[in-house]
Length: 496
Image (tube, rainbow, N blue to C red; front, side, top):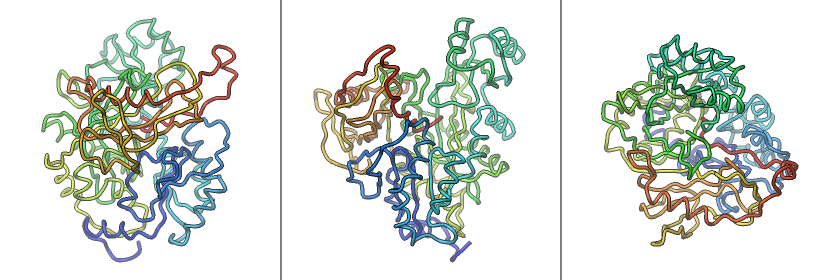
């Protein structure tokens, strides 16, 4: 540790406002941590997609973006870290680094190659190792850790099933019945979660993914609502952020059944459910400490609409798609964004905070500030080369339901009413849109989803208003289309 001991949130806020160490968020877009540069001096976004057309002073996009066909977010990050323009930009800021590195690198997703490339660029990766993150990311491991910590999962069985009769036998041993939810260890946006109640269901799902060769988590199907919460495991304990409702599976937003498509805050839970959700998150964080983990993580809970019980859904050991929401809640403004507590573990600082006091303060209803976000994906099957797309900025809803661009903006912190929304462009003219592609993200005040899980009318208007501003040329269909170059990968902000 270097320097004096920083005591309390006031000292920490002052430190970040004068921070001298360059910190980089490297990702396809700046979305997940957009606005953190308001809190942290020397914070930079290194991205592949130019959402701001050069107008955001903290975003660096290489001018030469000729690239191979990307296969994953990790591939995009590795491309950026290898890029001569990016390397030059990092070197130009290196004077502010300390010790053996010239800055910190943060990511949503990265792998061992990313770690090596960051080291070559003189950067320290400000996350637990890719190897540890990958192991903890398994839904099988998550379930086992939850069991250890006293964080219950939906009644389930873990094992393999080479056929549908094998699946029924596995389920029968745990008394799960025949209406089942089956998950593979890894997957994102609902792609490897399957609803199986018959041989035909098994055959359809097994044709998409190798179920017969995978370790499976087989659960009883329940009627539920999905809740998400982020937390940070610090040296002083687990700090728990606000609980939010998931917006999932709406066909207007995503082509994936059960696929994540956004969130709204605060979560529609009873006071006891909120207390329990925060307690279960703290328990899981404390258990992760035993695995050598530190820093940011996200937890999905399933709320049984019959019993009211909270069950562990998933653990995401990383920044997630709700980080953008976590960082604009009233609690974040009163103290500081959750992500800054994550950075403290990697800045070689000696600091003291009362985690119990902060957790108690953030649990109060006075910290409630209503926000929503949606991720708009392409839901059609055609592949198009875009000729036009809506630009990033603040929009308003006109009386006829159309979305009108009002002004440029670099984030959503300046939105003052529910009639306004910030739209972050992901795909622009010259990009391909295709089934599952993330077109853009929209953030607004107020709720976009009702308590019964249906979308608010104004949410549907926002979706229609933004979609109407895209236009493109369809590629050739059938066998000829298959010969076209592959489009870029999904950005999948949450990567659940």
